[in-house]
Length: 312
Image 1 (tube, rainbow, N blue to C red):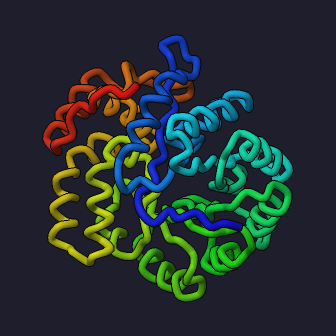
Image 2 (cartoon, rainbow, N blue to C red):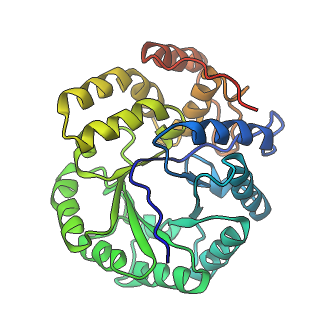
């Protein structure tokens, strides 16, 4: 297995739609081309939460992977969210992703675990089956501590040691666990790439990681690349200054009633940056309250993140 190098910024971009709700492939070309042009971007993760991946048909999922791959002209790997509930379903999803050109997969926990929890060994079996049957290199996805789909440390260590698993996207959102578990993951699996997905807690996690895998990267890649560099250099004053400059944007996008609203806010931000023409989402997502677009645009402007020249 050729291990991908995601030691940097890996954005998880939104999936643009037309005003009548169809996937907007021309907008994918603009979005992917722009993100792929930013120095320090290491890959794109599509079909995740920010990308409304579970709201797409199987055919749409395949076409979105291929469209983003075309948008970066093969310069960056495309990583696909693997979200199917059952293991066999997830295996089939991974096989389709491979056929569509995905270079790796981000494996989501089985949805039922969010409510009911998981049996010991079940997550390990899920990763094992997906890799063995599809050949897709995999990223371990650690869910927030408030869910029952969050993996205990032993489960994380066992998955991380399995063939095919080369990175972890950690979004535990419990800093006590982060501070105790990340050093152990690093010690026991020194080759494992550790990526934070704490969009709203970037500063705390920035000094322990190889990079970021965040939806935020699909809106503000330029300062996040700088933030990663400051974290790796253990340059707290610079990292703090970037964090503080971004805080109005972070609040406007992620400090909302539901983290899912962040997806809508990302699209509004991309409208303000001139990448998208509108912020259409699919149900069960809904538009943000009146005035949110102006709030997000003002926050971006205050952070020095203005309109991006339209890319062909």
